[in-house]
Image 1: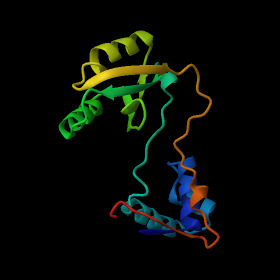
Image 2: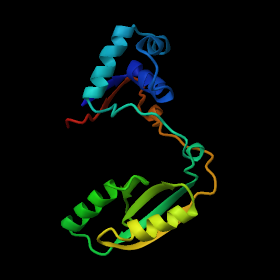
Image 3: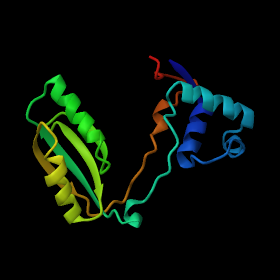
Length: 170
């Protein structure tokens, strides 16, 4: 378990806005010294709260203009089938996210490709060829008005100013 105080939450909020911010810039936002920021970041990274730092690219600007949310159902659900499916999906760079879900489908995928022809080819020649896949249905995004990777950290705030969260070692 990791104790998060208001400084930690403020630091995480600032990082979600600008992952490239220096320790000095973060120190101004959080009202701590740069060395304190560095120590807190190390602790948050070691606890697995901060998974990594990434650049967010705009797919449409790079010519990847089609996003599809695809539901997928497997023929069978044994451990070997699921492990093989997950390993195969992990090899497909077009699949940005894959979530095991409950409902009519077994998995929900977010796929990004250049155009509809590329989506068709990807689904027919690659996705449907993954062993164990029985059914695939896609919803094509017409437009996106909100895209965020920022977590709603306000749920963690308490009147005491300290929140206990589970780290990666638990």
